[in-house]
Amino acid sequence: QVQLVESGGGLVQAGGSLRLSCAAAGSFFSINAMGWYRQAPGKQRELVAMITRGGSTNYADSVKGRFTISSDNAKNTVNLQMNTLKPEDTAVYYCNANVWASAHISYAAWGQGTQVTVSS
Image (cartoon, rainbow, N blue to C red; front, side, top):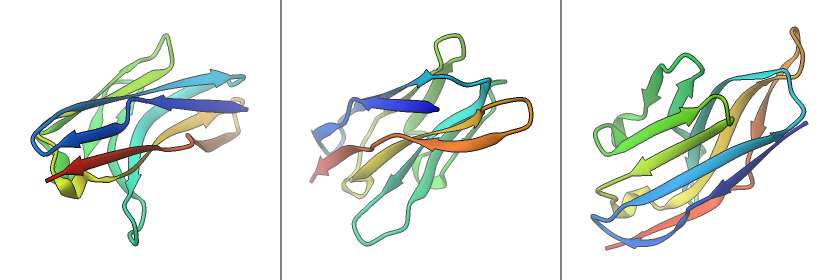
């Protein structure tokens, strides 16, 4: 089973920056993609950014040009650099990984969530 451990959330003023980090630990065959989702109060969880093992990235339109996702395949870590933060970025951010437990079994793993609050 994989555990995803997140760090880096906090409180920042609008226009500021934060960096989220996530590390995968435990027993698994491989991880072929990692990313970040977020959930604001009263809203559904939404994709923020995702990166595949091959380096392909996907961003929500609302964060393009402001957020950058990166990963280290050897360390099974993913980072999210968030710049020019806006109050509407306020949410709980969850790390996500597409994990292969074996050559034939995959599942989605989730972190516990880290709060990001952007004040106006």
